[in-house]
Image (cartoon, rainbow, N blue to C red; front, top):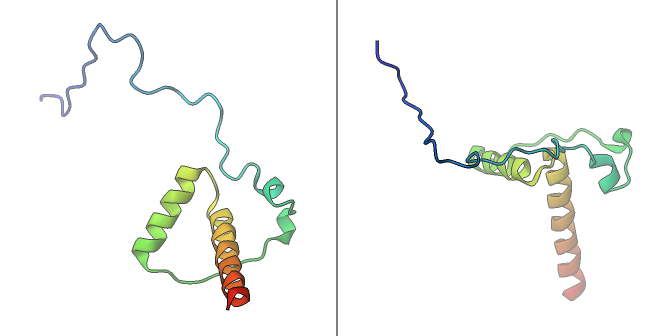
Length: 90
């Protein structure tokens, strides 16, 4: 049986195609310090979003290296600030 994939690396490649991450994983590691909150200050929040929006939001949080709850915190704060700014301008 022939191999399913044929992965070959040319002999003249001087470094790997990807640089290894030697800084460690920091997802949520400094979550408490970002807003000077204790873990007990966080309260559960449940809601529904369209599936495509939830998928994109989770992916963006992952790419930003933050937990979903931190992304939600930032999004809700930005929304509230925009509403307050709109109220004071009008």
